[in-house]
Length: 158
Length: 158
Length: 158
Length: 158
Image 1 (cartoon, chains in turn red, orange, purple, cyan):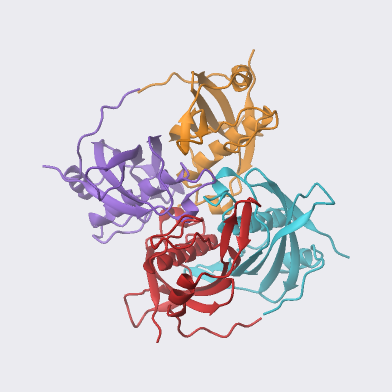
Image 2: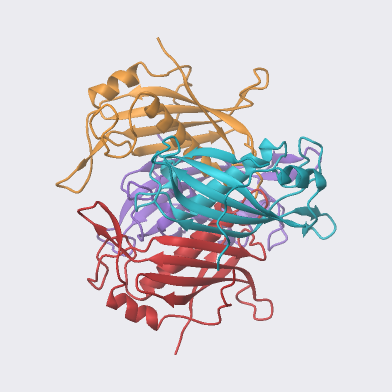
């Protein structure tokens, strides 16, 4: 049994560039905003190393990989729907997949403007080493992520 | 005896917006970059609360005021010269004034595209209160700031 | 008779900086987002030079002045309420005033984190000159702005 | 015969986030800045659709793919060397590969902090269709790109 997680966001003036469309780097910011909204939807804080609302473990989720494929431009003022799918859960990492839906309110015109992927790694802050350390994903997270949104994801190709 | 501090920066693609010119908010980023380069030029680190290269006190400089007045747009790829002037040194705060020089390499075309002001406050991190606290500007900073760039600054008007 | 315009926005990860709080330049982006939402609320598109939904004149609103005064930091994930007030309507320019309300859902803790001002100028794109030209504010805009939100605004001081 | 193109950039305050390091999305901005500096180094303007200094064809280079792999964080004030390599030249697209060198001035400590890839497509602005259209890479560009920097690039893996 699966469900989808979606997040709406309007393209703001500061997101655009001189080419008149959303700057390609801002798709990554939108993906991150959707990711964090997804975590909050499961009751987790995404503040790095802050105890979350469940009193759960203080973990952070820096990314070790980020990618995007662009098909259609997004314009200023346009509202886009970012769909988040959990692609893979490993011991210490999670793979997230994103679809950017253009014209999300119009079934016949709805179309994917871009897709993206994150690989995020579960870390805690090691007080002794004074740096982040990868750790196994806590059970509270693993359980919620496992019933998290999935869906039709194209096979990963080289 | 006075001197000027200047910093060059090219307008990057991501700095522009759909209107085809540098987004107004990025003038503030350029001002901050010039400010930090100015501090480094005096031998100070600007990392918040990190000991600087002189072993000096760990101070940070958050701003309590920022403003800009825009006269001419800046275009993608254009190189602008940001001139920093020390306008005022008080007990805990410093007033900085900025000129954005368009066509900086052409004496006859050189013109001010924008001006700006920062009021920055000297802070340390109070370990007990777990928050920043305003403090008197350390002597090492005060001395260097006092011989720092100044120049013709228009009178502050309402 | 007056009314207020407010806009909610969550501080996103990319809005923060190494000091752990929202970067000062992003308050200006939030102010612009609120401004554009305000224009849309009156039925106007804010796309520069695009005909708006009312078939109205193609005007844009670049800013000639922007300023902010910071009192309290905003943290990652925090939801802030941006209150927009119309401070002044002149022939070609409009003065906007902004309050950033921290803890907006808690009457007893609600507090202003920052205030800001924009002076925006009404422009059209002059096809002959190939550049923007300031024009008198169209009547459709002036009428709606005149009944637009105002409120208690501190006297402008030097 | 090959050569390398490198570009230096300091991590600015506004590039960092609450985790204390450069926000992952800004690696993409740095890659783009290096790409544009590379084009300028060959005598081409990178302004979309503006005639370049050689009077050459008005082409733009939007990206259809962008990716990054992160190994080590970059800190505020740190200077990083971005190395650009031309990975592939096809009929209408170019593949670019990037290495982010940390500690670039210290041969024994020099290490790759991140790598990235762009696939950029050559476009012109179709006046009739009022939108961008992919075109074959002009000879002037192809010739210069062909003698452009290459180097040891890891095989592309899924």
